[in-house]
Image 1 (cartoon, helix red, strand yellow):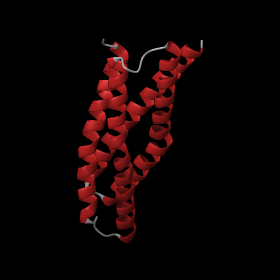
Image 2 (cartoon, rainbow, N blue to C red; image 1 turned 60 degrees about the vertical axis):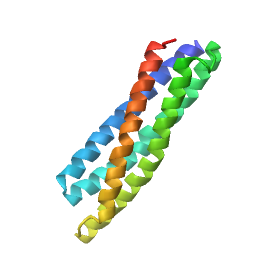
Image 3 (cartoon, rainbow, N blue to C red; image 1 turned 90 degrees about the vertical axis):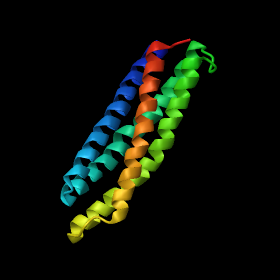
Image 4 (cartoon, helix red, strand yellow; image 1 turned 180 degrees about the horizontal axis):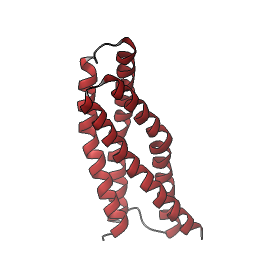
Amino acid sequence: MLYLWLKFIHAISSTILFGTGIGTACVMLYGHRTRKINIIAAITQYVVFADWIFTAPSAVIQLATGLWMVHLAGYSFTLFWIWGSIVGYVIAAICWFPVVYLQIKMRDFAMQADELKSQLPDRYYTYFKYWFCLGWPAFMSLVIVFYLMTNKPF
Protein backbone atom coordinates (compact mmCIF):
# COMPACT_ATOMS: atom_id res chain seq x y z
CA MET A 1 0.00 0.00 0.00
CA LEU A 2 2.88 2.38 0.80
CA TYR A 3 4.31 1.84 -2.69
CA LEU A 4 0.98 2.81 -4.31
CA TRP A 5 0.75 6.00 -2.23
CA LEU A 6 4.32 6.88 -3.15
CA LYS A 7 3.56 6.23 -6.81
CA PHE A 8 0.49 8.51 -6.61
CA ILE A 9 2.50 11.29 -4.93
CA HIS A 10 5.31 10.77 -7.46
CA ALA A 11 2.87 11.12 -10.39
CA ILE A 12 1.27 14.26 -8.95
CA SER A 13 4.64 15.87 -8.21
CA SER A 14 5.95 15.04 -11.69
CA THR A 15 2.90 16.74 -13.18
CA ILE A 16 3.47 19.81 -11.02
CA LEU A 17 7.20 19.88 -11.84
CA PHE A 18 6.71 19.54 -15.57
CA GLY A 19 3.63 21.74 -15.76
CA THR A 20 5.13 24.54 -13.71
CA GLY A 21 8.31 24.37 -15.77
CA ILE A 22 6.49 24.70 -19.07
CA GLY A 23 4.02 27.24 -17.70
CA THR A 24 6.61 29.56 -16.22
CA ALA A 25 8.81 29.26 -19.30
CA CYS A 26 5.93 30.26 -21.58
CA VAL A 27 4.89 33.14 -19.33
CA MET A 28 8.48 34.35 -19.02
CA LEU A 29 8.98 34.23 -22.78
CA TYR A 30 5.68 36.03 -23.36
CA GLY A 31 6.55 38.76 -20.86
CA HIS A 32 10.01 39.25 -22.33
CA ARG A 33 8.63 39.55 -25.85
CA THR A 34 6.31 42.40 -24.86
CA ARG A 35 9.35 44.57 -24.08
CA LYS A 36 7.09 46.34 -21.54
CA ILE A 37 9.01 46.75 -18.32
CA ASN A 38 5.95 46.70 -16.05
CA ILE A 39 4.82 43.39 -17.56
CA ILE A 40 8.32 41.92 -17.37
CA ALA A 41 8.57 43.00 -13.73
CA ALA A 42 5.24 41.39 -12.83
CA ILE A 43 5.94 38.18 -14.73
CA THR A 44 9.45 37.69 -13.38
CA GLN A 45 8.06 38.15 -9.86
CA TYR A 46 5.48 35.46 -10.58
CA VAL A 47 8.04 33.08 -12.11
CA VAL A 48 10.42 33.36 -9.15
CA PHE A 49 7.51 32.83 -6.75
CA ALA A 50 6.17 29.82 -8.69
CA ASP A 51 9.61 28.20 -8.78
CA TRP A 52 9.95 28.42 -4.99
CA ILE A 53 6.38 27.37 -4.22
CA PHE A 54 5.84 24.67 -6.85
CA THR A 55 9.01 23.65 -8.71
CA ALA A 56 11.43 23.31 -5.79
CA PRO A 57 9.12 21.26 -3.52
CA SER A 58 7.97 19.02 -6.38
CA ALA A 59 11.60 18.39 -7.41
CA VAL A 60 12.45 17.31 -3.87
CA ILE A 61 9.33 15.14 -3.67
CA GLN A 62 10.17 13.58 -7.05
CA LEU A 63 13.63 12.58 -5.93
CA ALA A 64 12.52 11.29 -2.53
CA THR A 65 9.54 9.27 -3.76
CA GLY A 66 11.43 7.91 -6.76
CA LEU A 67 14.35 6.65 -4.69
CA TRP A 68 12.00 5.29 -2.04
CA MET A 69 9.98 3.35 -4.64
CA VAL A 70 13.15 1.92 -6.18
CA HIS A 71 14.17 0.73 -2.72
CA LEU A 72 10.75 -0.74 -1.86
CA ALA A 73 10.45 -2.53 -5.20
CA GLY A 74 13.96 -3.94 -4.91
CA TYR A 75 15.04 -2.58 -8.30
CA SER A 76 18.72 -2.27 -9.04
CA PHE A 77 20.03 1.22 -9.67
CA THR A 78 21.95 -0.27 -12.60
CA LEU A 79 18.76 -0.78 -14.63
CA PHE A 80 18.93 1.46 -17.69
CA TRP A 81 15.60 3.19 -17.08
CA ILE A 82 16.47 4.02 -13.47
CA TRP A 83 20.04 5.08 -14.20
CA GLY A 84 18.90 7.08 -17.23
CA SER A 85 16.15 8.78 -15.25
CA ILE A 86 18.57 9.78 -12.51
CA VAL A 87 21.02 11.18 -15.06
CA GLY A 88 18.21 13.11 -16.79
CA TYR A 89 17.00 14.43 -13.47
CA VAL A 90 20.52 15.57 -12.54
CA ILE A 91 20.91 17.34 -15.91
CA ALA A 92 17.62 19.16 -15.32
CA ALA A 93 18.73 20.16 -11.81
CA ILE A 94 22.14 21.36 -13.01
CA CYS A 95 20.34 23.62 -15.50
CA TRP A 96 17.65 24.71 -13.04
CA PHE A 97 19.94 26.05 -10.30
CA PRO A 98 21.53 28.72 -12.53
CA VAL A 99 18.09 29.43 -14.02
CA VAL A 100 16.78 30.29 -10.55
CA TYR A 101 19.67 32.70 -10.02
CA LEU A 102 19.10 34.27 -13.45
CA GLN A 103 15.36 34.65 -12.82
CA ILE A 104 15.98 36.38 -9.50
CA LYS A 105 18.46 38.78 -11.11
CA MET A 106 16.13 39.46 -14.05
CA ARG A 107 13.28 40.09 -11.61
CA ASP A 108 15.43 42.55 -9.66
CA PHE A 109 16.54 44.34 -12.84
CA ALA A 110 12.94 44.59 -14.08
CA MET A 111 11.52 45.75 -10.75
CA GLN A 112 14.21 48.42 -10.42
CA ALA A 113 13.72 49.60 -14.02
CA ASP A 114 9.95 49.72 -13.49
CA GLU A 115 10.31 51.66 -10.25
CA LEU A 116 12.78 54.14 -11.73
CA LYS A 117 10.95 54.29 -15.08
CA SER A 118 14.21 53.45 -16.83
CA GLN A 119 15.31 50.91 -19.40
CA LEU A 120 16.35 47.37 -18.59
CA PRO A 121 20.12 47.01 -18.34
CA ASP A 122 21.97 45.04 -21.01
CA ARG A 123 22.69 42.35 -18.42
CA TYR A 124 18.96 41.58 -18.28
CA TYR A 125 19.04 40.60 -21.97
CA THR A 126 22.25 38.61 -21.53
CA TYR A 127 20.76 36.78 -18.57
CA PHE A 128 17.60 36.10 -20.56
CA LYS A 129 19.63 34.46 -23.32
CA TYR A 130 21.38 32.24 -20.77
CA TRP A 131 18.02 31.45 -19.15
CA PHE A 132 16.53 30.51 -22.52
CA CYS A 133 19.51 28.31 -23.48
CA LEU A 134 19.52 26.48 -20.13
CA GLY A 135 15.81 25.76 -20.43
CA TRP A 136 16.18 23.49 -23.44
CA PRO A 137 18.43 20.79 -21.96
CA ALA A 138 16.38 20.87 -18.75
CA PHE A 139 13.14 20.42 -20.69
CA MET A 140 14.51 17.72 -23.00
CA SER A 141 16.03 15.76 -20.14
CA LEU A 142 12.68 15.76 -18.30
CA VAL A 143 10.91 14.56 -21.46
CA ILE A 144 13.41 11.68 -21.58
CA VAL A 145 12.85 10.98 -17.88
CA PHE A 146 9.08 10.83 -18.51
CA TYR A 147 9.67 8.36 -21.33
CA LEU A 148 11.97 6.18 -19.23
CA MET A 149 9.64 6.20 -16.23
CA THR A 150 6.52 5.34 -18.22
CA ASN A 151 8.05 2.76 -20.56
CA LYS A 152 10.83 1.22 -18.44
CA PRO A 153 12.88 -0.01 -21.43
CA PHE A 154 15.41 -2.75 -20.69
